[in-house]
Image (cartoon, rainbow, N blue to C red; front, side, top):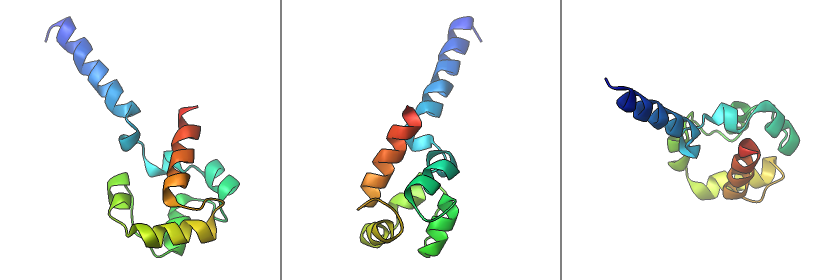
Length: 94
């Protein structure tokens, strides 16, 4: 493998790590975020309280959005899942 190929490969890995769709839910909704904005200490506890099962962002996308929005509105300072996700992404990237 040439140095150029190695560099391209490493840059590709870095881009994948920075992709917001690849951030783990535990990192995105860390304990500090959850304590600040919800009554749960972890994202897993938040999901469990709403009887949701998801460990990846892809699985979250498959949840019934209206039910998730209602759970978010009840258990957090946000009105919708999108608002919660946008805030988490913003805080993670700062």
